[in-house]
Each structure stands twice: as structure tokens, then as C-alpha cells.
Length: 449
Image (cartoon, rainbow, N blue to C red; front, top):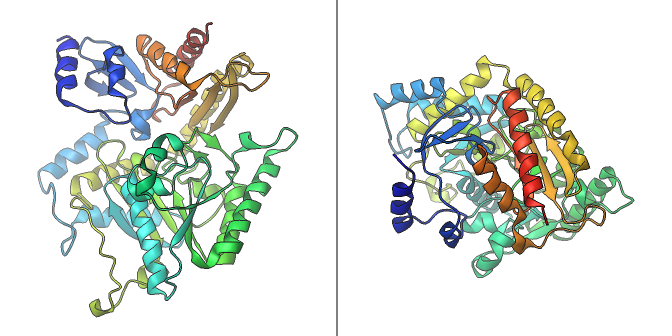
């Protein structure tokens, strides 16, 4: 069956996410028929190496037999039941597993449907905690420059990427913006350590002035993903934890994109090491099979809501599909792969292969800031490397790389002119080398005059 009939049907009825639909007047949609491992296949038999894990979710590849089998078993028993007043074993078992794996002290698990809903849960729960504790003036939040936490109104309010946020400003609440510890933002003569000190100083200034009205600080540990794959040293986490303790505000760690082995440890916070007050997970939690997220908190936060109903302290937040049994089952199968396989050690080997493959691009005249944290690697396309001059955004050079990739068996979806690879953990070294060769050739094609 050819691709064209499906594309024609799609364009009559579907509105795709994060897309200017007019682009598809000239950029064909790619209908996918099946997927196995790191490979997607369209209806005409063309393959595409899924270099971005289908938006960072598919950590163990497509069609993983263990996850497939777990879902088949669960389908014969229970597909869904509300989690208000009812419960089921997959939700209980998953919560038990998550609080066991998470940084010490996180004892309670509240499920959401996706990453943005986990952020909304954390924001509401933090504010409500302070109200229950007799601090109603605490209503504000701090986020980092260039941060991204999701597309819903609360999550967007604590984000700092104008492309996503600017249009909806009238809907959003204000958040304090603290400096990012991203090393690429340092002054010409400064070190990465200097940048972290400056970022912590800026955070300290905000908390010192406004701590009595701030509920919490929300960050993406180690990598600010959708804000341009900005990376920083774990020492910032330690300094931030100290500041949050000093000024009595919550530390919310949004690990939706960076959790479950992506940065070189199961959770990025382990590299601090720190214990956040809220740990948010999603994306890879179900191996990319079904939407599910979780907000993990310590016992003192749970106890602030545990009271007689008449007190008005209950956390009355819900989603219809909270703790869906099928999604929980997929997550349990995913965690079982971690338990039975030394995923982290294997990822370190694969990370070294990625680093070695990318190394020659450091000398490319139109490539700047090649960087890597674990299984995330990124670089910037630039017009003039010596002067650090970017290409005009409307030239969409990154999009040229994307189109080149599709023509050469690779799914490379850039963030503007930031190109990155974030592959499933089942990718083979030869596939990494093939992928980077395609990326390099795409850069050459995209940067021709």
C-alpha cells in the first residue's frame, strides 16, 4: 500500500502537534505501518532510525517482547477502573517500585496522565501544602531561564521558551526567572564553575527577597531539553538544594524527559546527589507504550493533607485515567527490564560510542557547542563559528537536516537549529555510527550556501 492515500486522508481531518500544518503542503507526512527496535517502517517499506525515541519516550525500542506480553496478559483481566475509592494491583505494585527506586525519602506516589499533568499536580500540591501548613502567602514559583515544563497553562507558566509561551501570556501566571546554569551561557573568560556560581547567586537573590511568598523552585535536572538541550554540572543541584533548605521552599525536580537512565543514572538527581521534595517522572516510564506520569513526594507532604474531611485539606485533583492498569502494567514491565538487565552500564558504553562518533563534528565550520550528557547528545548549527553567529531563524536550517534524514533512513527532529540524538537504549554501536554519518551529511547539505 502506498503512503499517499493515508496522507491525503490525514490532511482532511487531523491537526498535528507542534506543527505549522501549512508545512505539509511541501513536506510530506510519513505514515508508519509498523516498528521494531529502533526502526520505523512506512507503508512503502522505507525505514527510519528513531533517533529521538519518538519524542523521548521509547527507551527500549518499539515492539519490545516483554512489554508486549505483559500488556497481553493484563488485557485479559482489567483494562481500567477509577482510582478514587478503588485500587488494583498494577497501580499498587508500580507505586511500591517507584518509591523503592527513587531517591531516599520519597514515600508517596500520585499518578497523572502525562508530563504536563505531573507538573500541574506538583504546582498545585506545593501551593496547597503551604496553605495547609499555615503559609497562605506562599503562592509563587521560581523557574530557570530557558526552561520548559509542558504545554498546559500551569506548566507553561513555569516555562521560559518564548516560542511556546508568548502567544498565551494572557492566560499564564507570573513566575520568577532565575539564571540558567547552562555552561554555554558563561562569559568568554569564565568557566562552567563560574556560570554555576553566578546562577546560584541569582537564585539566592530571588529566594532572599521573595522566599516568604515562594512555594517552590522547579528545574529539569542536568539537561534543559526543549529549551535547546542545555546541559550543566550536577554541582548546581547540590547548591540549589542548600538554597531551598535555607529559605524554606520546595525543590521540584522535573525528570519527565531525563529520568530512567537517560543521563547516565536511573534518575538525574542521583548525580547531585540530592533528594528533591517532588520528583516528576513520565515519558520513558512506560517504555513509550502508553501515557502515564507520577509525582513522588516525601511523607511530610502527604501528612499535610491527611486530616478529617471537614478540615478542607484534601488534595482534590484527579484525572479519569489516573493509574490506568494497562499503563501501570507497561511501566512495571519497563522497570523489570531495568531490574533484569544492567541498562545503566550498557548505556555508558553506548554513550561512549556516541561521543566518539560525534567527535569529528567539533571541527565542522558550521557546528558549535557539541555536548553530551549520557544518552543525550546535541550541537548547534551556526552560520559563523568564529563569531558565534547563528543562522537567521526563518532559514530553518535544522529543518533541512530533518528532511535530509528522512531521505536517508533517519528520524532527526531538531529544536530549531539545535540538532540532537536521543535514541532508544537498544540501539547498536553500528547503528549509532550510521546515524551520526547521516547527521553529518545532513549538516553538510543544510549548510551549503
